[in-house]
Each structure stands twice: as structure tokens, then as C-alpha cells.
Image (cartoon, rainbow, N blue to C red; front, side, top):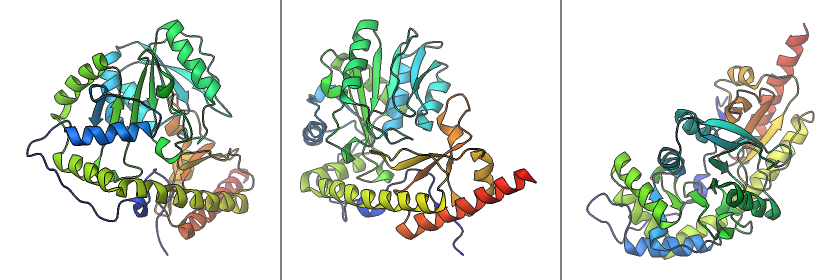
Length: 347
């Protein structure tokens, strides 16, 4: 029997990546970017409705480095930061390491943006929210931007899944006064191994972020930058996006049907975007479930996504990486383990 069905992390399906890479320009030294690539990135950002100039863009080593740069440049110990509740586990780790005070921004069943605290920033994933998969409505994007102006705080917009749902407007595209710092990753549609992300902010902030980036790692891999440029230039990047949207939609339907079949007692909201189902099964402890499933199925327990350790009845399942057959088989095994756990708890 196959030992591991991977429904845990949000690894992209390798089939969405470009079939081959060309590298027409390879700078000899580690660098932040180069002119031809900057021009392609400006076009890429327009796909997300963002008009940016070269001095408003910084290429990062994945999007999580953008969160780290933001936190270590603009936040101080004890600052209050509103975090979606639940949210991306990697962001929770970064903000905790910065010793900020997290403030709840509930997203189940939908956003409650009525933030009372005096905050320094909001971290949000408004398109295909991780882990819930919901989209923030346009009127709420406008409202949170108004709040940032009225109450003088930053918005860190994580658009990790936005390239898969380009019809959803970014908060950055509505920003007139530089309140929004935008980050995204290219790992989901280009290549996760090349570790590239994009950061967009007003020039005065990008200058500070660039200084921090150079302190961290001295710049980006020239090979990764050149491969990205080649893929954007020859169109294979955009072909990958088209494949990704088709493949992920098909897998989402398969996972939804498997959940209905094997876990009818579970509660979830059908994801509008992103790569995950965030499901609740009353009466379970998903940390214990993860232990029971070891060497069988990889899952992400809900406690990873709540900054205060809540979420034991939740688990996040990814449909992006595994094959359709593995998705169904993995959920069948999860359902069997949940049944055994509940049966034993009654003994």
C-alpha cells in the first residue's frame, strides 16, 4: 500500500510548470533584478490591476521573505497587528518572532473587519484566503483601505493565489496613497524550487525594503531571475497559469465530491480561490488525527492557522499536489481514522 497521500502543504502540481526553461540573460553576479525582467514584471502586475514603476518593485526570495522584510522594517516589539483568524501559518511564525501583539480579524464564515484596537498594520490574504479559500468582497476591500487612511495603519496584502483568480481586484489596485504593501509568490504557477516573489510599495518604502533584503541575502539568484524572465518573455509562464486554473478547478471538484462521500458530517465553505478546503469535524482533535495518520496521509491540523492555538476541530486539506485518485483515497483513509477516534472516545 502507498504509505503517504499528501493532502497537507500547498505544493503546486508540477504539471502546471513550464515544460522547459530558457535563460536568455544570466547576470554574472547575485543581483536584485535587471531591466528587461523589471519590464516583464510591470506587465505581470497589470494582470492583477496594479500600475507599478520599476522603483516600486522588489523581487524577494519567496513571498514569506516579503512578510519578514515588512515586519523587520516597519514593526516594533509590542505593536498591534490585525491577523486574519485563521491565517497562513508561515505569517504567524514571522509575526510571533517579531514580538507583535496579534489582533483577531475573523474570517469564518466571512470577514468581520470591524477592528476596534489601535493597530500598526493589517495582514490579509483577500483573494483565495489561506486556509478558508474565501474572497473578500470589493466593498470590504474599499472599507479596509478607508480605515487605513482614517486610522493611520499599513495593509500588507498577500496575493499568493491571485494569479489563479485575476478577476478578483487587489486592494493594492484601489490604493491611491501608498497604504498597501503588496506581496505575491510565483511558486504556485512558475516553479516552487526557484523561490521567487514580488513586493510592491511606494518608492520610499521599497528603498527601505531593498536595504533589508540586501542585509538578509545580498540579492536574488541570477539563474532564477533569468529563468523567470525567459518564461515571461516566451509566454510559457502564461500557459502555466492557464493549465493551473484548469487543473486546480478539476481537483477541487474531486475533493469536494470525496468529502461529501466520506465525510458527510464535516462542515466547510466551498473555496472560491486558493488551493485548500478548510473543514470542521466536531468532536475531533486534528493534532491527534495528524499523529494517527502518520505514514498514511499528510494533513495540516487547524491549530497551525490560529495564532492562539485554537482550531482543534479544523483541518486543512490541499487538492493542488496529489493526483485525483490520491485525493479520494486519502480522504477515505482520513474518514476511517476519524471514525475510529470517535468510536474509541465513547468506550
